[in-house]
Image (cartoon, rainbow, N blue to C red; front, side):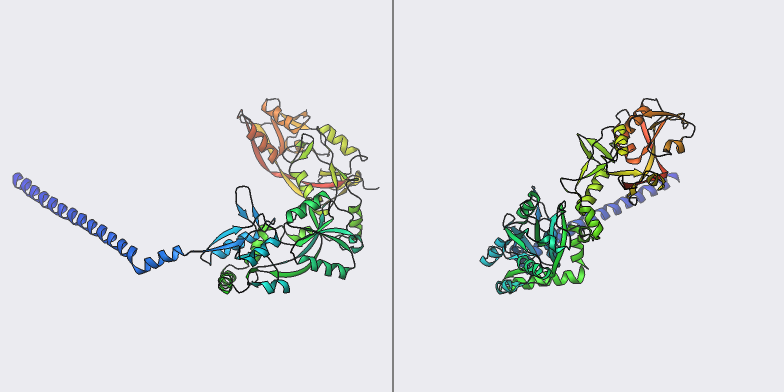
Length: 493
């Protein structure tokens, strides 16, 4: 009986093996058929009319020569050949809806050269011009690709030319771009406002900017599509659309450009605003409106009479003295504001915390402290300071060793210029170890002389990250937070 069962099982196994072999052979043959079929399909595709057309179409891939003249914010190319700017972004966006390769030509050429090269057939298209009767005789214009206006800019520290006070514009030397239509517009604007000026012509916007910063001209009249640097906008004039232009009669190319722009308008939303915001700072922030009193205050400060500015040199990375120059988050913030406003300034450069406090108490040498920490206005009122609204809020961190047991017996601190210190609030009753700088405070903790130090978050982060011993750590505190203001120390009583 066992033998019969064993033989039956052996027979069953052999049948199963034969079935498995048959299935394996069928699968193998199927794989071969599939492979052969795929090869056949590939061969058919290679020699099919459609594929032949595609190959032929690829060989005829359209290449368009684009005028790409240098203009900061509009056409930019770095030393490695990377391109950016409104004009470049527009071309790349248009390429989504137009099967085209661009050849960028003329980065070292002027705007005047671009128009001549288009006339001569050296390039096929160029972007950014506005319509004028003279241009419409030579070129065909696309759909609008943006809106700009003329801007009249002066150097940020120019306090003699006052926004909208046209008597101060009289006789100013104005840089203009050769071949630009802004020439006539500025003349019309000056005639309407009743001021005179002397025009000076340049081939590139870079030459214009160099002339302004070196003092060879007083102002630049150009398009708002030029990104400004260390300049203040004193007026705007003549807003209008700008376009892509092609040589007169090149209808085929113009139709392709317009088709792509139509698709962008239908699919890409407000792409013009998107490109503008990406490549330019808001013009409104550079065109501040001042009262007559504010203008008078700004005019008091010039290169010969700068505003003397103070900040703590021991708050790295918020503010610090590096080789006699004030650096950090707070000084950079102030520079940005002062440059926008056109105020000339000079940083005082204390090296130690004690020097900083001494400067702060000396109203004869210090006119403004840009890092005043005050919970209330009482300190400012008592010391007869004029103060701004808060401009930065800082969180605190507790710096300890990694083996800290949670109890603060000794806390490191520096001399405070306010009544209540963070140490009083966070470690009441602890012995205070007085240090000269906050860096010294954290070093005291690292060496075991103090249990903890309370500093601003970025200071703690910078110190702990640079500590090679690995013994330090910091904890971000949700509270308290501190706001900082700028204070005029010379407000009359």
